[in-house]
Length: 241
Image 1 (cartoon, rainbow, N blue to C red):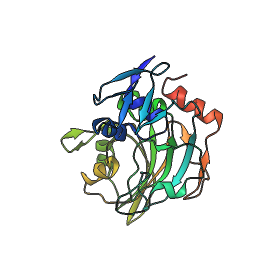
Image 2 (cartoon, rainbow, N blue to C red):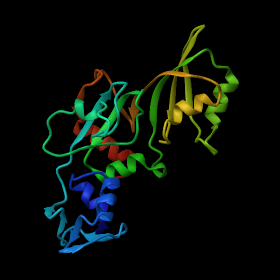
Image 3 (cartoon, one colour):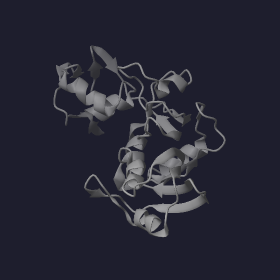
């Protein structure tokens, strides 16, 4: 089957698709002995020989699926040039490399999926598949009904309207409100920016569900393998089953 070269490299557990593109541009990838620098190159994953820095790689069929309760103050990446704490610190010993599925910003916490299954990652993060994510959001002050209605219809963030959201008020106090919000987009710092358009400051943001998989009782900084049933549920949600 013909697939994109960067996808093959990611599925082999070498690096992410984005970094694979960079490696291709740098001339570090060979297919059947020839250096490839075309980012759109496609290969036959059953027949073609692919080398990275002179070493042959093979498609990884031994997929790993993990869930982490990401603590705040942690970057969703495996390495940081400035030496800041990354999610790699909380991963268990693994024989293969896994990558975060989507975003969860530095100050946010909660459910983060990690896998080496590039096909599932694509479907979980691409807007086309509208995979739902649920968050608990604590904001300063009290929201009015018109504010909730506005968020549910969509607000303009950086010139583009957000998709409709589902919001439930869980608790209201004099100085803060606790809400549950469900969205299916994955734009950078989207929820914080949505509330910012209303003049509301988010003081805590926790993801509690992704694609029908719940965080449950997993403690901050802990990581576990998904059950076969959870993996099937994610695949069913994205149309892979």
